[in-house]
Each structure stands twice: as C-alpha cells, then as structure tokens.
Length: 262
Image (cartoon, rainbow, N blue to C red; front, side, top):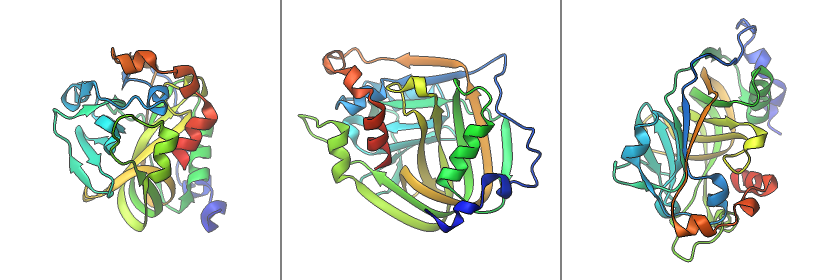
C-alpha cells in the first residue's frame, strides 16, 4: 500500500463542488470496439481493422496492434504505438489492430486534482461518482504522475499463446514524477469478455516518447475529465481464428483481471 493511500480523492478535491456526477444524457455518442477482449485472451491476435478505419470512430481510446505488437493509445485523434521497449511512436493508418476501443471524447465532468492519490483511492472514488454504473465511461487524467508502473507486450509469432502466457514475458517499466496522460475506459461488470470489468488504462508521456498499459500509479496533481455513453458498437472479426476461439473461456473475470493487472 502506498503511503499516500490515506489521502483520499475527496480530500484531494476538497475545493470542488461534489454535486457534479456522471449521469446519462439524451444524445449519447458511440463507444466503438473492434473484436472482444475474450478473443485476445484466447490468442486471436491477427488484426482486421486498420488504424485509419478505427480513427473514423473516435479520437480517444486504447487497444493493441497486429500480432500483439505493442500497446495502443489514441489521444486527440492520433494513434500511438507503445512498443516492447516502452517507446512511443505515431502509428501509420495502414497498421492493423485485433482489438481496440475508441470514442469521440466529449467530457461532461472536468475537475482538478490538487494532492496525491493512489490507484485504489482514485478508482474507488470514480466508482462512487458513477450514477449510471451500467454504462461505459471514458476517463482521462493529464498532469504530474508521482509514480507509475506500466507494461508493454511483445510481438507474437504463430502459433499464438493465450494472453495469460504472453504476459509472463512482458516488459515492465517504472517512472517517478513524470508528466503525461493516463486514459482509458470503465466497463460495467456485465461486460466482462467485451472489455475489462472495471478500469482499463494506458499511459503516454507528455513528450509522446514513452508509455504502455498501466499496472499501478500515484497521481500528484492535474486535471481529470470524464465522459460516458449508452451506445455500444461492436465490430467482430470474420476470421477462422475468431470463429474457432472459445470465447466463453476467454471471458473469465479472474483470468482477465490477472492478465490486465500483472
């Protein structure tokens, strides 16, 4: 447990009027996703949607690349590839993704963070603020990160191993006092297998040179923005690998959380 754990999110935002909540609107925009996380869990890593196609559906999001060749961040309409060395580069429009989720980010909540808060406290407080817990939320923090631990998967070769095997050899990185953005989605528990139940977050530094899949963090100060939607669109692959995959087995909550948090 981090020493900053006792600094709750409520304390950090004491100057903010706490009556501001996540709530559904009448004109929800679309959460677009290609493939299912349960397919990635089972080793369905061949991309079927190009980055150019993906960006037509949203300017904010995350995912991975063909053959699991790095993590993805979509920020302000630009897709970045975060490779096995933790380095970030702008993706070409022709690159393929086997799994990604994006939204046109239109935050309905914007508030400051003025004191350190760790991962557990931050996500607990976000959960407490979510009035419509069965919708999809997009979360973005931009500012100074006191500590962050993140990972990057390495490119895979056929025959593909399941994700739980792949993450055993992932590259992990730790940084202190880095300015950047942590972004991603909160998926409701019933959506296990579609996405990660709870928070799925990626990181990219302010200078856009490094980043990856977030494992742990302590935020220092910055700006938090939150969006939500009740509109979900899934683009499923029409491939033999996807058709043959045991998607029920890939939708195990325990396995997904283990793969995403280790």
